[in-house]
Length: 194
Image 1: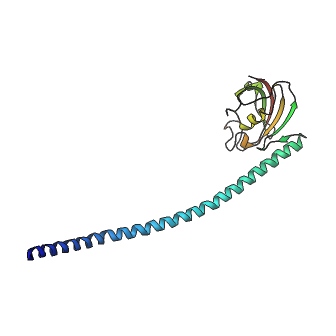
Image 2: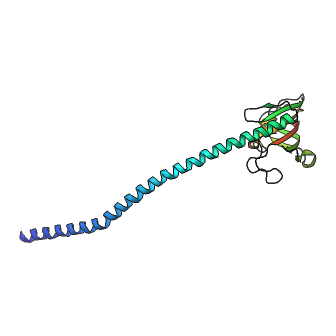
Image 3: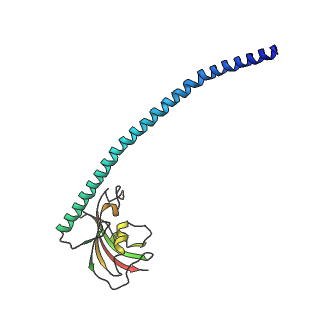
């Protein structure tokens, strides 16, 4: 029995020292992991708080840009004595000559003659040099403002659209003739619908 008792006692001491050795190694690792985790977590909340400030600044800057672009468009309309209507998206339009054909709808193939001018008056594209524009309405192959405007027309209508940049080529322009954030003036004739 003494041998058994001595073996158990020896084994218990072995387990005790083994536990201490493991504890000495793992406790600092667990402790430092806890500290690193909590400090990283608090850093993330600081980062989130820092991100909120620029988001608010960007929203404020965007509102300012939209407002100033609207003023530019309104001044253009006033200078040229145009009687235009405005849609909810910001598209300005006026029918210059009414046609007598069917009204354009999504899925129709539209064929238009057009002249695109910058708000400064510079002609950048025209069907006289580039040929007529042909596209399926509602499939996004043209500026969203042009599609929206075409849906207001009947076959044979002539119209003028002013597209704010967000309905035209947006922040980048077309990287050819249309600069970034440039409103466009479209003179359009809806020649045919198929």
